[in-house]
Amino acid sequence: QKEVEQNSGPLSVPEGAIASLNCTYSDRGSQSFFWYRQYSGKSPELIMFIYSNGDKEDGRFTAQLNKASQYVSLLIRDSQPSDSATYLCAVPISGGYNKLIFGAGTRLAVHP
Amino acid sequence: SAVISQKPSRDICQRGTSLTIQCQVDSQVTMMFWYRQQPGQSLTLIATANQGSEATYESGFVIDKFPISRPNLTFSTLTVSNMSPEDSSIYLCSALQASGNTEAFFGQGTRLTVV
Image (tube, rainbow over all chains, first blue to last red; front, side):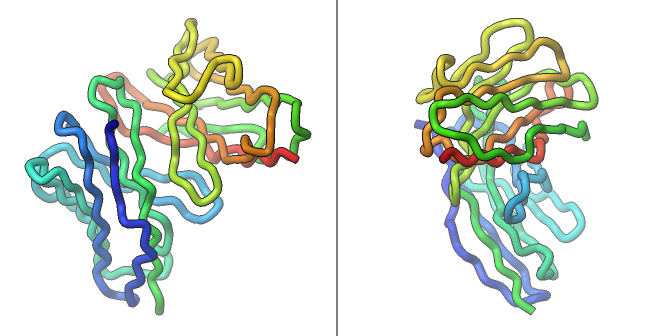
């Protein structure tokens, strides 16, 4: 069974701090990794994707991938209350024509 | 990114009835998927909607319960048949925009309540 695991949280951070969200996956054949943000009552919104080991930065967001250890993380710098949402890690099923397996999601709460 | 429109956005249905959810994309996409998100849970893939052929269902989902159509590259429907309260969920349409592209986008979802 291919799995994607996340800590459900809630992860509570003060405004301006760095929020660190982690995800582990079981399929060593996975090649691409996605982070989605989902506000309560809304559909998931793609915020980052990463294919290569190392870091990928986009504004306040940094995705980090370590294929040897099978984890991918998302760092949010200068966290804002508007970042409060559930963050979903998603990994395509290898050989599965881009079908995504989602983790349970981590709920992030940024407090003023 | 492609814009994906779903309708209805929400519905309340009687048990034993069926509901068809429509998904329209504003541009041609290579692949379309249907997901379910039960209350407080993450997304579970129901099936891949294949253009011009039968959908490919994931384990635990069957065509008789969730018939899917995809008559062209921009449109798909999911029917939830013979509904029970356990089918109360959010149903989400997703699409991949281009061949080789793996970034999936989502419609706004259909919130279904079965009473």
